[in-house]
Image 1 (cartoon, helix red, strand yellow):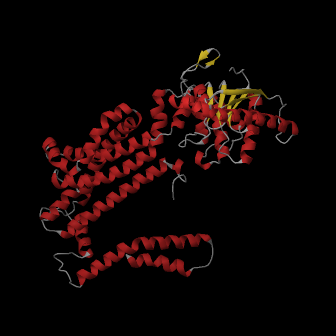
Image 2 (tube, rainbow over the protein chains, first blue to last red):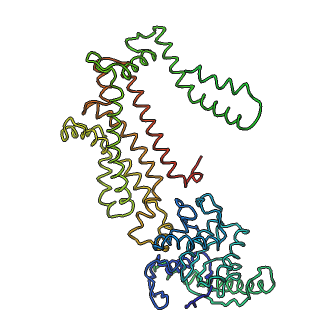
Image 3 (cartoon, rainbow over the protein chains, first blue to last red):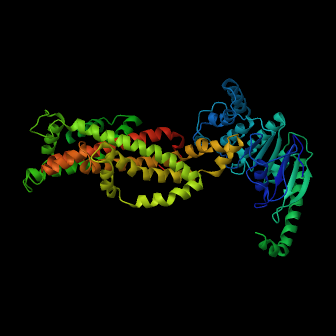
Length: 240
Length: 289
């Protein structure tokens, strides 16, 4: 599998299919047991600021204010203070958090926390954004708004995005390309291009056509998985 | 004392005019009254028992007698005849100094080693067994050892205090460091923190709540140990006064010393939890209550 620069790729699949593991490998948190992952020809072996990760559980540092959280990356990379100020302000503005900078994470709603988490990686100007079910813990309204934000930010920055989700709607709404994974044995099952024009309207009929098509495709893949479980189970049990 | 505190209640109770502020004020007065009810009742009952001669004043001095002896102890002229007169301030200072230096050593070593134990499994394997064994030995058992090693000297007291309060600190800090959320470690790494700096950037701040728990328990123990050390190993200090009062059969002074130690222990605990709340204000509202 190859991902083009500037592409928005979504990986979709049921729980336990290994999509988060794949993201962790891309981030450098985990090592693949076989095979390899390369960015511009170079292998990934450790986490770095060139790959910004947005976690489902936000993972903001609770002891830092929102601004300090966003400032964390530039500070670690020893960006001089005046420039740091400027980039942090820009990142905060991009996700619409100006004015809440001095609050602590626990004082913010889930949506605001996830915006902050996004700002925290955008400020580092990473090559790739890795997003691990970032909106799964949010209420539907907030989720919708943040999906629009991400689409806008992506349009503005043209970062390569690797987005993990289990929502078909989210995948169709955001991505250029949807990759489906299956549970056993964690294999890529389908690779679909979404050619809908942007900005996308989740209530339009063409959107729903795409969504329905993708859903039925996934259902087929899933069904074939379940049929093969019986035969694969015995061999799988020996593997671990 | 009790009469004075009743007056604000009457004042607030009569002015039931208006506003939430007064409601809050009245609630606070009520809470204050509820808090002092039991201590006040004990004092009154104690005074009544001694005044009615149920027990002789030789076996139990009245609160007022304790207060008078205490007054002498604090403000009395220093003279050869009354050994205790006017020494209170000096003794308090001596005890405070010992607690402060012993506790400072325990805090510095306990926090650093605790974080290392919680983060590096090598350090944990090296230290865990020994720490758990030493922790199981009651601290008072170390008194003869300390006196042998250091003699009747300040360092014996400071050793006991530092050694004793080290354990609750190190154990709490290690537990806190061990529970650093993995996702925060990963977040720091992907933001460019080098693995070497993780300890300082993530593990230490994540362990702060446990650090303060450990410090609080350790400080309480430091006060226990300063009294033990002063009774048995060094001269001067509140524990020394307590033991001398016992040898002179002065129950009034024993009681005054006990209340002094209690007040100092309470004050230092308040101080450290105030500092803790200030530093941990990022988690207000995330914990119960």
